[in-house]
Length: 173
Image (cartoon, rainbow, N blue to C red):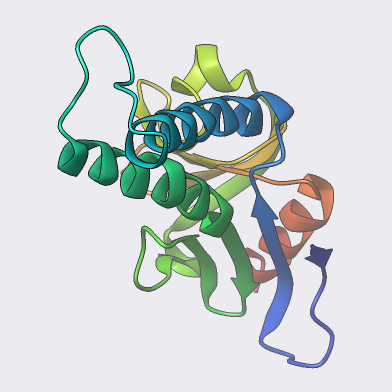
């Protein structure tokens, strides 16, 4: 979901992103599928799963964590970004309880960037690297915020130009 907020004059840009990469969902599905299969074979059909089967209680835990928990966790992950009149707000749900705030007065400038998630930041999610902190869930485009006295923050976006324009509008006031 990408949209610019028009009803609230204090919000200039709002975006919510989710993991969309097919390889992420294939990997999650593979792990969950193995957990489901092993649990069904061992607990329902009463056949040991594997050459060194886990106890039934551990199989049940594996199923809950990997068969149910992992897909639910990845399904709930989303990156919310807002540009408000007083700064940039980022929240990686469910990992952040509230927005991480980058106040307008601390932002020197911003730029639209094309990045390589794995090489530049070590992958997707909340990343810390030599180039600074990154928040990203998909794609290779984002906005880099240059902060006073700190390393830059890169925030992935599907609408980088609109995002950067909103940031420029608040830091120019």
